[in-house]
Length: 556
Image (cartoon, rainbow, N blue to C red; front, top):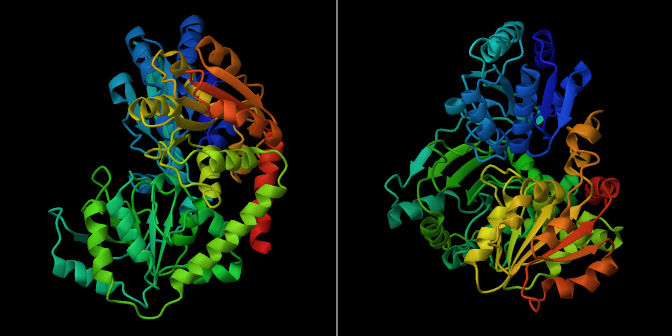
C-alpha cells in the first residue's frame, strides 16, 4: 500500500537502506517501479534524498528499518524543515507491544522526530479492512502535508508484524514488585529463595553487564544448586565456575527430546537484552513460565521479554543476586536441571568445535579462531549483526576475555567503531579489539580519521561483500530484492585506503593459514600504531555453512 500511495502522489524516487524489519517494504517499492537509490548509512541516505529533492523540486521518500536507523535521519530532516524540502521518511517498526521489553532494535519511534519534521504519522498495526482504510487516509494526509505550502519533511512510522512476533504466548501473571525502595530485608530474601527452591527449575540468564566480582561469586553459588542453571553471553562478562557460556551453542545442538528437559519453571534475567534467538524462542514457547526481571524497569516500562513477567526486582543485580544466592543455599533437594543444562552444553561445545574444525574458510571459522587467540587481558568490542551472533556461538569454545561489550541497548550497527575507540581510550592496561562486519565498518569510517585513535586499538573487519546476515535470516533470504537492496551488492568499503591514510597498520587475510601468520603482527604493539585487519570471506559460503550447522547439529 505504501509504495502505491507514494506513486499515486507523484513520488518517483526513494533512497532506501537495508534492514530485516523493513525488508517487505523494500520489496514492495522495488516491485512498484519507483527509482531506488540504495545507501547503507541512514545519515548519508537522508542527505542524499535531500539533494535529490532540492534539485528535482519534488518529494523524495526515505525508507529505513527499526531502531537507531530512524534517528540517523534527524540531521537531514532538520535541514529539510528549515529549507522547506519535502522529504517523506518511512520507518519500519516492531509492533507496539514489543517496545521497551528488552528486545533488539526497539525504541520509541512514533514521535521520535517531532522536533525536525512538520508532522509525524503512526500507521495502525491491525490488518483488517478498517485499519487498511485508516492507513490509506493517513498516508494520503502525510504526503499532502509534505508537499503543500510550505513544503517540508514528514515521518511515517509503520509497525510490521512478523510471524515470530505474533506466535509468542502471553501469561497473565500478576506482576510483583520487589524492593521498590532499592532495598530488601533478609527475611524477604529468604522467602523468595524458598519460593524457587527445588523441585522448581530455575534458569538464570545473564545479558550484557559490567564485570562484577560480587555477581561472579553469587552466580557461582547459584550454579552449584542442583535445580539451577546459569547461562551467560559474551557481554555478560561473567567469570564463574559451572556457568554455561553459550546458550546458543547449547540449544543449537540439543535434540528435540532434550529441549523439554531444558525448559525452566522460572527464568531470572539480569543485565541487558539477550542476543540468543534460540534462548528467547525456547523461553517464549515454555508453558507456564514465570519471569523475574532483576534491575527494575526500562524507560519506565517492565521488560516483559518472554510474555511471562511475574516479578520485577527493583534493585541492582549486584545487590540482589548475593542475597538470593545466600537465601537459596539451604535448599538442595535433588534435581537434575543444572546437570541437564551442563550435559547439553558439553554436547553443543563438542559439536561446535568439530563443526568449526571441519568448516571451510568462512566467518564462523575466522571469528572463532580470533576469539580463541585474543589475549586474556585484552578488552573485546563486537558490533551488532552477524559479529555478535558468531561471538555468542563461539563463546562455547573460546574466551573468557577481560571484558566484552556490544551496543545491545537498541542493537544498531551504527557507531560500533566510535564506541570501541572510546572504550580503547579509557582502557589503558592492554589493547582493545573490535570485531565488526563490513556494513558496520562502512557506517563509521569517519571515526578512523578522528585523530584520537589510540595506538593500542585493533580492528578486525569481516568483509563478505555486504549484509551477510540477510542470507541467513529466514525472513529475508528468499526476497528477490535481497542482493541489491539488503546486501548492498557491489558495495565497496575502502578499508585499505582508509587505514593507510589514517595511520593504521593494515593487514589482509583470506584463509586460516594467512590469519595465523598475520595474527602475531596484528596484535604486536611494536609499531606504536593502531591496526586494521580485513578478513575476506565469501557470503554464500558463510550463509551456507551457518544454515548447515544449525540444521544438522541437533540431528547428530
